[in-house]
Length: 388
Image (cartoon, rainbow, N blue to C red; front, side, top):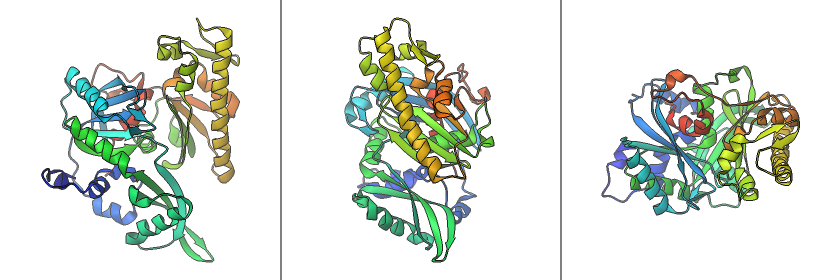
């Protein structure tokens, strides 16, 4: 990255640059590549990590050095209206001005920045291909993806990971995890970092950030590694992200185009939707919130039940595909997870033990903050972690 970044006066080859910068999109490393990079020198770098959402931007300042994560501070910033839609930057100048003001007002002095986001435009697929040499992987994967997706793959950055080998009568095949990240998304995020005077550190996707979080941080209330398969559900504003991890690696991911926005639209007269969420609760199969009439509470309950119905379909699809690897536990986080009793309601409706991500080891914090609301910052924290 540094070599390319130094060529400020020359025309930037974005494809080459982005293939260099988005290493964390590789949720695993091929064995040969890993061996070559084992002795790579790791530098201690302070980074500000942004989790870009359509309603809020979560920012975390910290370092990840020699497997130790230190968080100096974390912040929540209101996203300018219509600036980000489905993970894509729509109002570049407005968003850049907001982040510049935020950095200045909070006297944040760092050189490097990272973005993590999620979008239905990012393609994540599992494909089976004949066993080929490492240098042929991307070409073969591109061909396979092109067979069933009507897209121009020249517009995407492709990252691949070998999940396992399959032995059959037709010979050895490779089970591959392929991620196709749109060039236009990557370029906009790169340009945004440059606009706010930060050097690009890495570009990440939320399900990979969460993957690193659960592997390298762990949970205080329940050691997730006791479970073979867990489901992490991010109850966001525009969307609900359902990510399933098996043996510490992403195995399945889906985006539901629903979220807290559905409730906010219904409760448009409520002055502060997020205060409302924290004061609400689900008890005895009823949604309760002081100041909201019975008609509206029933409507909110219907929205929640629709979410659960969609989540249940995804979980059933996964379980039916993976009869020997059914989901052991669900963890919920994000805005709507702050509704009291939500995890019990999940457990009762889905029949799977559900926990809310609460906090993390306080020793990782180097500020007055104790991590008590850390579930809102999981994506940004995970993006700080680098796998070398």
